[in-house]
Image 1 (tube, rainbow over the protein chains, first blue to last red):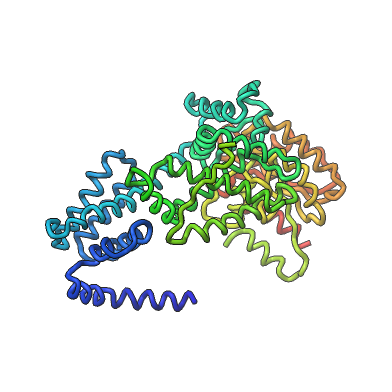
Image 2 (spheres, one colour):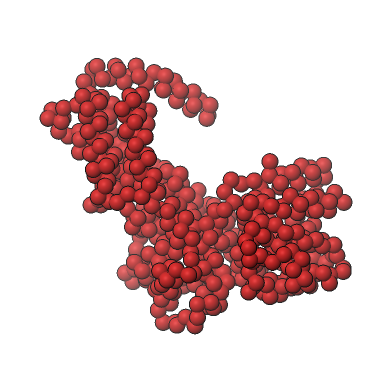
Length: 318
Length: 169
């Protein structure tokens, strides 16, 4: 099966220039134009435009792709996206493909939206990676304040007796110092938990309550950090592209944001909780097993073209 | 090739399953050791283990410590991991260790103690760890203390060599 797929893929790549030349002749449009006019907007169009750019043999386009990849692998501000990425890509393509925007007024905005989504996603990966690499530092006042805020959001009525205390286990940390539990997920793990508990306090406390169930209980914060790991893997490996590209059609911004990643995390955590309870595990030793199954289910959906995860906030309104 | 597959090869002649149990407090480095032994690419990206890792039991979470003993049956070798840099929790580590020694299913099972995190300057020497957790006084079974650093794999080869000796017997 894989062999056949590879075979057809190489066959396609071999004949691609010929097909492209043929279509160009008969439609008078270059491949990028055909995609921007023909393919469904959202994930499908972005995916095909991304592929077309990456496969281009034109040296100017190759250079453009190299520059855009390089730019988005470093931190960059929101305002730079338009000038450094979108305008640059449109100008280069118009020039190289000899497209006159006067006769093709629909092309630049449509192509621009795709570029903004594709490279906005790459930029988000960089933002998330930087957060992940920032280790939790007990000497940092900012970090400590965030940790305390997490406690307060989840347990508003219970006073924390000290910084190092067994009480942390009530919200699902391992020992008496949560600082050692963030590990490979760094500040990303804490920021995710904090966002969830701040933006959806009702839902977060509802899940915390589930996690304290005598039979189907789990360690809330530790499982939360493992969900961060999962969200991060999906994003980095590109399996979250369909969701994030499709999401842009509904939002006001043309590029994925950190907030949208947090919401993606909240969705996964919320769904994992239901999945866990439905699985009726014997005890916490089943965690890896259930988590694997959960991840497989999510991956199956996330690779669909029309994938869009929406959080069902029924609990928040109760 | 990972050290684990080396071990598996060594054992391939016999049908009996080999059971090595890896225990220790949370944040002592069990998952990293396991990833290092299995030759996984990113031993440094871990999250706290909820439940246990399939290659052996490996989670120090207080909530699941009561379940440790469900996995003691037919254990060939027990590995106990200590974070040598965490002086504050050495007592807690010792308590858990002594609890394990009392377990009937683990009677006369050889024990390997890994004094982990030797890469940190604040780490105690392996001899100090052996002294603190009462290893030196132990007469009723074979034991070994091995200094290691899971993050770069130092000391793990020696640890596996010791285990291999037991597997051959």
